[in-house]
Image 1 (cartoon, one colour):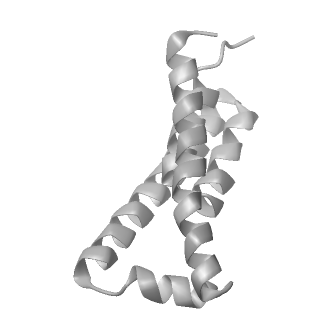
Image 2 (cartoon, one colour; image 1 turned 135 degrees about the horizontal axis):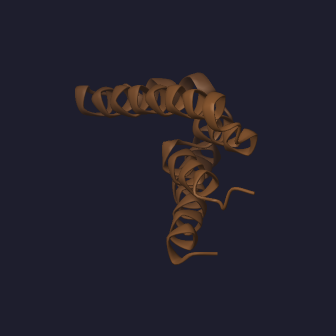
Length: 105
């Protein structure tokens, strides 16, 4: 595996673990309240802007993944979509790049 693929994989793992530590901490303090977390994301204009920035980037990544899968038939790359929306863009994007750069057989 190339060094670049190792970097993408490491970033995907980091992008899954690091943000999740903050989410787990929040859930421990506030209970498993998804709507409460969404409300916390919109506590001020700065956090709302960040949420919308990440949401738009996640949608753009999803469109890109679907468009490329339709052409390249790299079905494994579809795993990046649930990773993006269930974990976060910080995991989904490097995961997609990792899956996209695999050697084609």
